[in-house]
Image 1: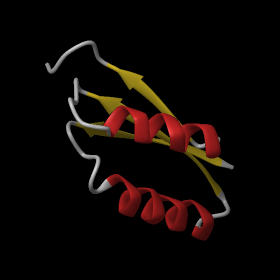
Image 2: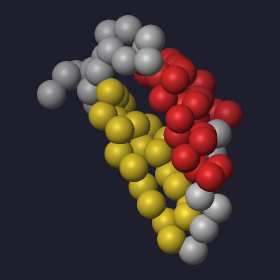
Image 3: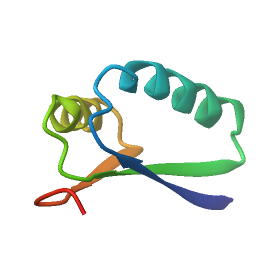
Image 4: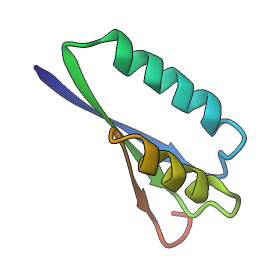
Length: 72
């Protein structure tokens, strides 16, 4: 089985994250021969981006995140 990690940089993306999660779920479910990990990099967002990612990571084992201390 192939293993693919997709890095997703985020900065104030709270509005679009639900749609992105739905598309990533579709991608992962439609490719059963590939194991996906979705690694979100929060680049110092000042909206609810980090909270939304944390919530999604708690529900989906494929999602993980790194939170940067400020915007780089």
